[in-house]
Length: 132
Image (cartoon, rainbow, N blue to C red; front, side, top):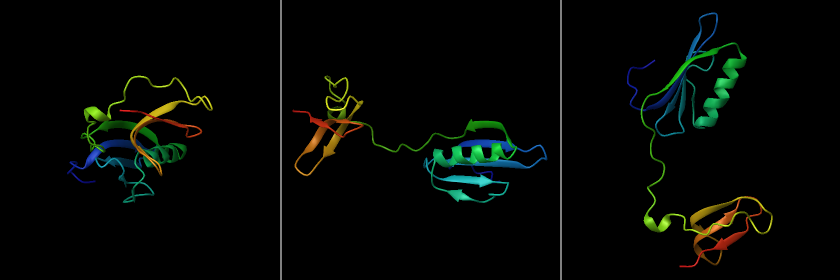
């Protein structure tokens, strides 16, 4: 275990009744996961929270119990802050008119013919372009 934790976003500590201890660190890049102790000692993965969830389930099924988890440092900011012209405008459709699924806003959507802001269906991929 290292004493320098500037690269660590969150840590989970597990302990087995036989005394075996495992530490799982999610790094501030939000995708690197490092395991210290147990059968995966020194293992480094790049699946982020999905890897953490998988490892926690695996160890808990093996008899380990979560002793504690705690945030260490703030995570990296994955995206730049939205500019005023990227904020979702009023008038979002309640649901997709084609299939009834929820819609999401995409500020920079593009297809073969156009690029710009659009509301898109999460199901059938119907899209409604926004006009300036």
